[in-house]
Amino acid sequence: MKHLIPEFEKLKQRFPAGFESSLVLPCVRRIQEDRGFVADSDIDGLVEYLGVPRIQIEEVLSYYTQFRRKPIGRWHLQTCRNLSCSMCGAERLMAHLKARLGIAPGETTADGRFTFSTVECLGSCGTAPVVMVNDTYHESMSIEKLDALIAKLD
Amino acid sequence: MPGKPLIMTFPVTATSHTLADYRARGGYATLARVVAGMPQEEIVKTVTTAGLLGHGGAAFSAGRKWSVINLRDGQPHFLCANADEGEPGTFKDRWILEHAPHLLIESMLIVSYALEVRHAFVYIRGEFDLPYRRLAGAIDEAYDAGLLGEGVLGTGFALDLVAYRGAGSYVCGEASGLLSSLEGKRGYPRNRPPRLTVQGLYKRPTVVNNVETLANVTGIVANGADWYRSFGTAKCPGTQLVSISGHIAKPGVYEVEYGYPLAKFLYEDCGGMVGGRKLKALIPGGISTKVLTGAECESVTYDHQSLGAAGSSCGSGGMVAIAEGTCMVRLLQVLLRFYHHESCGQCTPCRDGTGWMHRIIDRIVAGNGRLDDLDRLLEISRRNDGTTICGMGDAAGYATVGILAKFRDEFEYWIEHGRSRCDGALEIAAHA
Ligand SMILES: Cc1cc2nc3c(=O)[nH]c(=O)nc-3n(C[C@H](O)[C@H](O)[C@H](O)COP(=O)(O)O)c2cc1C
Ligand code: SF4
Ligand code: FES
Image 1 (cartoon, chains in turn orange, cyan):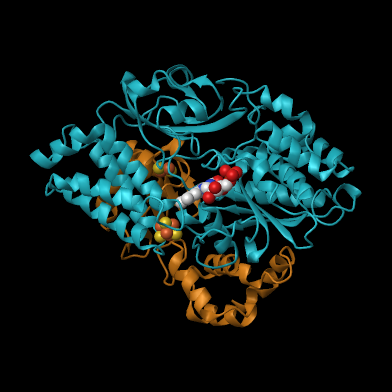
Image 2 (spheres, rainbow over the protein chains, first blue to last red; image 1 turned 90 degrees about the vertical axis):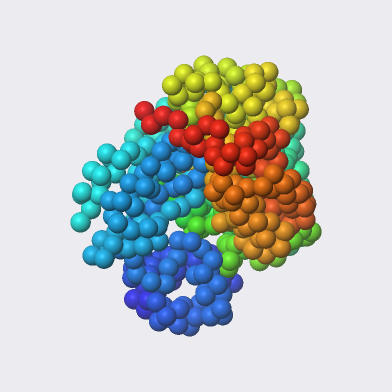
C-alpha cells in the first residue's frame, strides 16, 4: 500500500485536523481497488501510516460487506434479492446464474472468471431486478440480458 | 406530476447536473444573498416556520433540530447529509445526487453558514457508484468556482465538504451509526441521550439530515416560509419524493405534493398495477412502515396526517405496490431475512429477535410451521419495540405486525396445508 500514500496525503487535506481515524474507510477502499482485496501487509501499513489501533482496522474489515480479505473472480456478479427485485424476477435470475455458472452464492468459478453473490437492496428498485457487476449497476435485467452480458465478460 | 414540484422542476438532460446548467437555473444566487450577511437566526427561523420535516423517515422538524446548536459555544459543529439510502424500496436521494448535486451543495453551504459549520460531509452508500461520481464531480466544480473552501464567494465564510463512502451496511443509515462509520469504525448506533446535536461526530455538536430534507432548504431560504407553505396542505406543507416500485406499471421517482389522493397517484400517474391486476397491498414508505390493504388506499391522501390516521406513515417515501396474487408469507420471509442479515448485533432483542423471527418464517415456508408460531412472531415484535439502541429492532417488528394483522389467514393456510394459498409467488409478470 506504500505507493498509495501520496494519494492518501491528498485525501487527508480535505479532512479537519484530528480526523485520521476517519481515513480508515477511504484508505481501505482504495487499497482494495488497487489489490483486489486487503492483505495482512496492507493492515500493517495502515496501522503505521494512520496511527490507529490494529483492532479498529480488523473490525472494519469484518463488519462491512463490501470489504474482503481474499481475492475473488475478475467479475463480481451481485444480484439484489430484496423485495422489489424479488417481485420483478430476481429469484429466476439467481437460479439461472447458479445453473449457468455452476456455483452457489459466495463461490468463484474454477477459472477465476466469476464470483457470484447476493446483496440486499441496492437503492435501485424502480429498475428491478438489478445485478451489480464490479462497480456498475445493470438495471431492469432479464435472463436474456444477463446471458448477453456474461458472454461479453472475459 | 402529482401536484406542484419543488425539486424536480427541470428537465433531466445530459448536462443538467453540471454547475453551468445549475447556474443557468438560478443556482447559487441564494447562497450569494446569504453570505452577503443574512442573519444566521433568520435562516433557522424561516425553515422552522416553513414547517420543513425530515425526509429520512422520522419526519422530525429540521428547524427544531438545528435550534439545539449553540452558535456561540466555541466548539466545532459538523453537518452530515445522509445519503445512505438503504431502506428497501427507497431510491429517491439517488435522483438528487445524480441530477441535482449542486442543489444539495448549495443547501449544505447555507445550513453550514447558519449553524457555524466549517466542515461538512455527505455520507453516501458504498454501492452508489454513479451518484458518487456525480456528487464528487460537483464538489470539485464548486471548489474550482470558489464556492467551497476558504473565502466562499470572496467572503470570510469557509466550508470544506467531503463525500464519504460507506461500505455495505444498512444500519449506517441510522444517524448515530452513520457517525460511527464516519469516524472510521464499525457502524454501531449509539445510545441517546446525549443527542447528536449535543455530542455527535467526535463528540462535537452534529446535525444529520437526509439529502432530500437539505435539498429543500435553498428554495425555502430563497422564497420564504409562506411560499413553502403554499405547497401541500395546511398541516403538512411541501412535497415528498416518492420512489415507487414493485408490481406497478410505471415505476420511478415522482415528486408528490402532500395532500394528493393516493389512489389517483397509483392508478393515473403510475399507470396502475402490472397486467391490469388489482392492488392487494401497499408498503407506503420503505419496508419498515406498516402495510396498507388495497381497499385502505382508496380513501387516503398522501400526507403525514392521512397516512398516520390509516395506521402507517410516509416514512422514506419508498413505496412498494403489491398486486393481487402475491404471496404475503414469502414477502415477509424476504423482509425478515433482510433484518436478520443487517442487525449489527449490539442489542440482544434485535440480534436474537430478528434471527429467531427469520428461523420461524423459514420453518413455516418449509412446511414445518406450527399455529403458535404466529403468536410467537407477534410476541418477539412486541418485546423488541423500544428496547433497542436504534430503530431497527422496532422496524422488524412493525413490518411483521402490519402484515400479520391484515393477512394472517394466508399464514394459517400455509401452516395447515404446508404450502402457499397463492403459488408462493412474489413475481407477477416479467418486467416490461
Ligand atoms: C435502521 C435505520 C436506517 C436508516 N436509514 C436511513 C437512510 O438510509 N437514510 C436516511 O436519510 N435516514 C435513515 N434513517 C433515519 C436517520 O436515523 C435519521 O433520522 C435521518 O437521517 C435524519 O434526517 P431527517 O431529519 O432529515 O429525516 C435510518 C434510521 C434507522 C433506524
Ligand atoms: S437495534 Fe439492532 S441494528 Fe440497532 S443497534 Fe441494536 S442490534 Fe444494532
Ligand atoms: S430491492 Fe433490489 S434494488 Fe431495491
